[in-house]
Length: 194
Image (cartoon, rainbow, N blue to C red; front, side):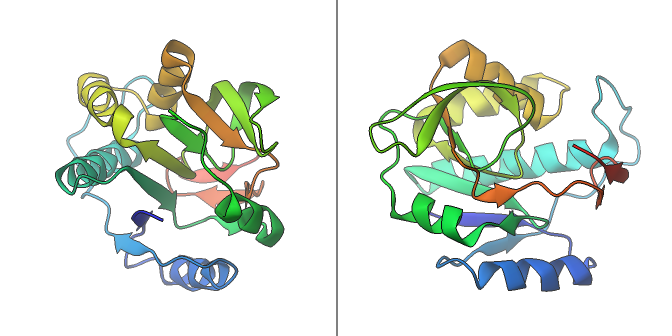
């Protein structure tokens, strides 16, 4: 297991308690990362608000650090993850698909998936959004960083573009991370129902 980073604001005490409770279900340690400060001068564009811009800049920082540390891959998660204990155990016991660029532990929105890997755990991901918990391979670092820095778009849109263009993305099926509807999203600044 390479590094697992959990993006978490220190002031979100309830989220800290919740994610620490979730982490008791799995057997890995995380390093908590404070998100980059919100830029109050940032002009919102293309569905990219100030909180999403902060997450994007935090992601850039994490990927740059993974690259500097020469990590084979890095795992990035948000602090509102809810784990399926059985699904997470299956994932942790599995071998990752060869040549992957991204592995998503859940996907929302209009996704397109097909075919399983030889273990029957990973499904090829052609498009789909959700960066609530995902893995980025060192093979993707440079392209991901270039696109993150060059585009004023949310990270979900950028990863979805990369899924379609490079066809080296997978998701775990069934999802070991549940996306709970009706929860408040700090990124959207509202309750989400997807």
